[in-house]
Image (tube, rainbow, N blue to C red; front, side, top):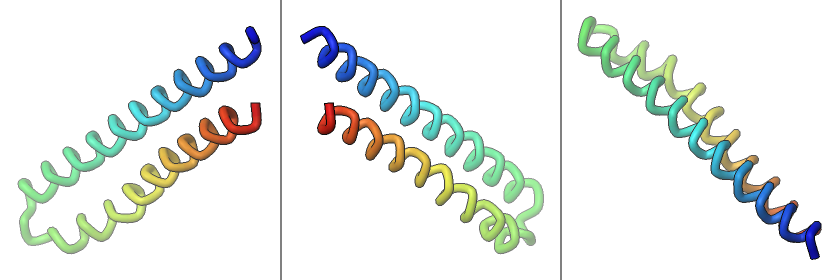
Length: 76
């Protein structure tokens, strides 16, 4: 019984940390992009294009963390 509790607690803590980390990363990236667009509005298209891929990659990391946490819970 103890193993199940530790697995659930570990999955919950890991999922929480992954989601918090992704949220902070996405927030910092979006804030930097907004600041850059504010400084140089003529480069909006280039800045938006350069920010899109990292945002998708960060979101993908958060989704993978959720999948792994769910697998830990299901397979335990």
